[in-house]
Length: 415
Image 1 (cartoon, rainbow, N blue to C red):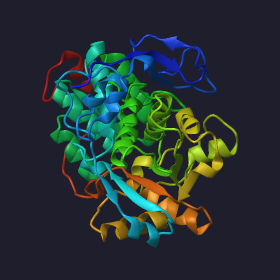
Image 2 (cartoon, rainbow, N blue to C red; image 1 turned 120 degrees about the vertical axis):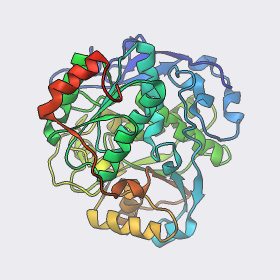
Image 3 (cartoon, one colour; image 1 turned 90 degrees about the vertical axis):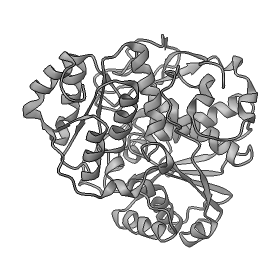
């Protein structure tokens, strides 16, 4: 097993000269550089000079604790074998959608709760345990809530998931089976409700509390391991292009940071071009970088890609694509739906959000974008999560007082 974490603190992305202790976890953005107009996230920094490069001589496999030196402190026994997901060669499929190079699919549906969010929540729940938090609270349309609930359950912590009416029915059954309390409220009320739960119960937020997404700084660190795995799976080489389904940009940033670290450690001499792939009907990151802004807020109708149909972006996303508008690719609703069906016909069934990278690439190549060399599309979650009816009982905001009292007292089913 790898030695322990080499994390040294929480560093501001808004003012990288500012380094804060590892605890308490800062979830409201950098206190030095954030203000009412803009909130800047933090990241975890490490003693890179102490990293043993032999860490990258191992074979790829499950369990993120194998990457412990370059992750925040992980709780002992919390891992459920997340990571180590397969990289599937799909050259012929790539050609059929206009990709000139060799396409590989990184299938994150093979994680414990069948999505990439397990990587994030291992780190967040570990931080909650270290901080003595009484539980986990998250605003989520699906995958994030499921992963938070699973890792909270493994840690013996209660979990509350605040969602809107748009959550796929399958997720509600999934969440409640994991012991989570589900609170349904209008979309624009999710964050005020989440903040109230956090403030009044001592639960740690696994998701965002600010206007422009800052989130929990521990979470995106888990996504760096996707970059580490790609490096190993491609025989210690770097992809030329990476297509990342993008909502708030946490995975996008984590993958970008992972490759930055590989270069800093002298293991690679170049970096991949990473594309943020968003539903075209919203696309806040695309709006932000097109207007030279750190982040943006947009409006728009609902998308079938529920998990990434965000109305606001994060500065993390702008950093990861170097604020370049040509690296923020839109995916139309028609193409997302068609791409899921086309991919399923080859044996891989992904949720709509999971194929956003391929959908965006198909449309972008038809406009002249050349994706050559080694091209990796990250597939984020199983298509089974978009279906299945449910009769599960849920909470409404009108019953929030009683739920908070129950959580405070630590009594009742699942508490």
